[in-house]
Image 1 (cartoon, helix red, strand yellow):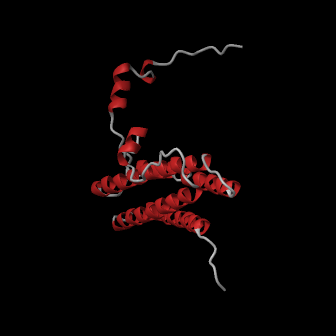
Image 2 (cartoon, one colour):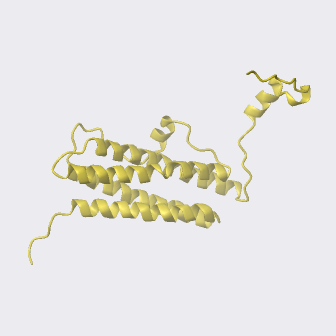
Image 3 (cartoon, one colour):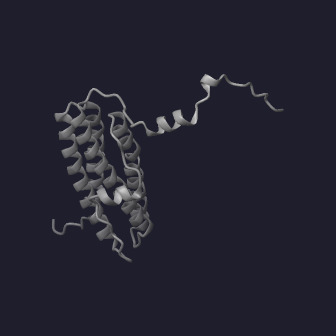
Length: 188
């Protein structure tokens, strides 16, 4: 029932001083990117990550508060969009770590860095929700392009590759939101 514990030699037991030393050691992931490139790319990706988290929460907010005759369609559309947006968060943060940078630690970090504006209104019409998200996604794609250019300039092909996929997904969301807010054209 109980496993007998075998005593470990003293050299395999970590002492308190060694543990403190390891905790104090900086996070230094090896990379062939130049230190300035790591700093610049990590900074750009962290701001992008803050934007993505903010857009995720805003999209879920509008998903939860959707109303009107197109409720089901818009509710499902925004659920799909929020899943896609959230799916970017971990790869962005891990990319920062892979190149030797440090990423966001808290909601406070997100609040300080994000460029996506909050919408805390009690009621927002469905058209206003979709239009606002369309504009936010369009701006996110522009920021992704800027980050892509920075990564390309510094030879970070892995990040540029990820950004290309996310730009395409973001443009698709922008397109769907644009088409959902268009009114039928009159005439023949």
